[in-house]
Length: 262
Ligand code: HEM
Picture 1 (tube, rainbow, N blue to C red):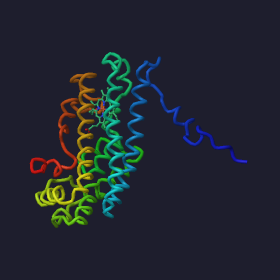
Picture 2: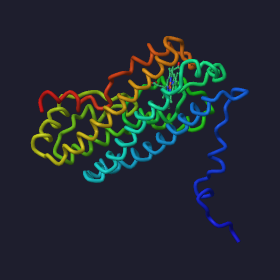
Picture 3: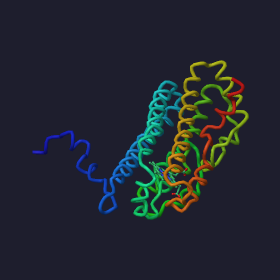
């Protein structure tokens, strides 16, 4: 007879709870926090990717309320990701220094799922793939997502269902290229804000998610600055100075460009 399902077996806890292995020896107290917080982020990244794949379907089939529902969840998860930085910041610079050497060249720069998220939103920078060593699990998914239609491309489908004419050059755009702002899309968005108030719930939620991702970048860079100052990153970048370059860069530039007209 097969074994009875339990809380632990359903959740795979035996494996999950044995995957926190500090490299410091004897183990430095805060290395456990460092591992657990990264793993927690990765689990939430997984969930957001799952939600974004569904959001794309909802947008292309013009399901306004389903899209709103998914975006509400994504927004809450992103807020949680931002809030978790508070926990990270309980680790002092001295405490981090006590095990930092043991990370070798491992870095958040190599987070495949974070890059998948950026690509899924349409924030595409093909060169970030170079930091991910061949053979890293899920690297192929990342390469696939680069040339896959992003949330923005599916959002254009939604807009067309709502009467917004999407310019041919945007439709013909290489899916691997980054989102660009577009005047005609902005005109359409302003019209929706003024004439189809129910769609503004979706547009505001997309703005919330965009702002949330920007907040995460800001909180991460400040956490990095207070922990390592201007030291180089373990991934080989210039650290804080390099991270600052992606601050305040929107995922959905058109939604920001129209604000003064609303
Ligand atoms: C005190 C803790 C942390 C420090 C000192 C730190 C440091 C850094 C540095 C210096 C970089 C630049 C790349 C490099 O050269 O390594 C970076 C990138 C990154 N880190 Fe962290 N990090 C910390 C915590 C976290 C956490 C908890 C996450 C959660 C997943 C994370 C995710 C990332 C990601 C995704 C990148 C790439 C960001 C981008 O390309 O814009 N980091 N980190």
